[in-house]
Image (cartoon, rainbow, N blue to C red):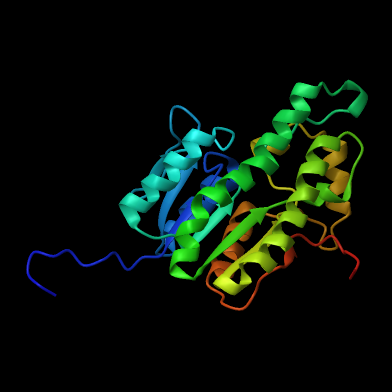
Length: 243
C-alpha cells in the first residue's frame, strides 16, 4: 500500500437500533468486545454511556428523515454494513377496549414500521457488497396474549416480514432471521407484577428467565454464520410446537 494511504478498517460493521434500551446496550457492548465496529442507534437524550469506540447514531426509527440520514452517515464513515439489528421497540399493554388509537399507532410505528424503514434505508449497503445479516427482534407475545393486542400484532407481523425478506434477499446473500429473546430484566418488563413473573418463570422448562447477555452472545454468533436464514430463534426454555 502506498505511503500516506490509510488501510480500510478490517472490523465488521453493525448498526443496532434501540441501542439505549436494556437489550440494546448489552448487545452494543458485546459486539464491541467481540471486535465489531458498532453504530448505536438511539433517540435518547442524554446519550447512554456507550463503550469507547462505539459510534452513537441519532436514530428515531419513526422519523424517515433521521433514518435516511443515519444510513448515509454509516456509509460515509464506515463504507459498509455487515449487520443490522432491528431492536427498537415499545409496548402499550392494556386491553384493546382501553387502548387509544394513538397508542396503537405508536406501537406499530416503532416495532414494525421502524424495522421496515431501517431495512429500506440500510439495504443498499448490504446488497452492494452481496453479504450481510439482518436480525429482527420479535417476541413470544407474537403468539397472542390478553392485554397485548398492539404489541402482539406488531411482533407477529415482524415474523412474517422476516420470512418474506429472507426469500427476497437470499439471491443477494443477505441473511434475515428473527429472535424471540424471552422475558428479560429490562425497563420494558419492569412493570410486570411479581405474580406475572412467577407465571412466566414457571412456563420455562429450566425454571428461570433469560438474560440479556445470553441473547447478545447468541446474536453475535448468529451474525458470524453464513448459511442460516429465514429462521425464528426462541431463546428461553419455553417449550414450543414444531410447526
